Image (cartoon, rainbow, N blue to C red; front, side):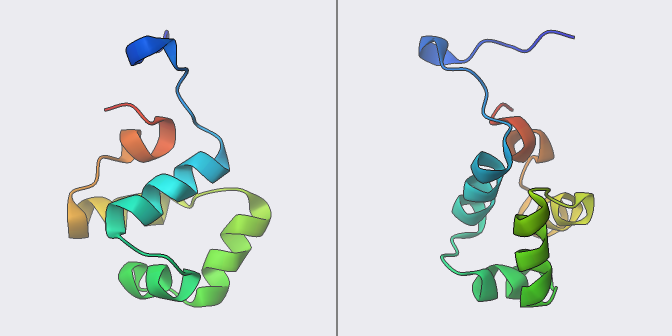
Amino acid sequence: MTETPTPYGNPPQSDFESQYKRILEAVECRTQTQLAAVLGVKQSSISDAKRRKSVPSEWLMKLFEKRRVNPEWIRSGLG
């Protein structure tokens, strides 16, 4: 499967930090506590995900259900 090129040749950003920044942008949060409230999880769950450098799939589903955020955009920056 090939990825669709992005404008100006910038590669898709699928690393954890990029995904996390897109999540914060989508829900307009600045802190882990604010994000935890939006996702309906404990703040420690946010810390755990950051430590593991992995966005749980459940977060993607909640973001889609609550805010209609495209999970593909969170994962890759595309879509």
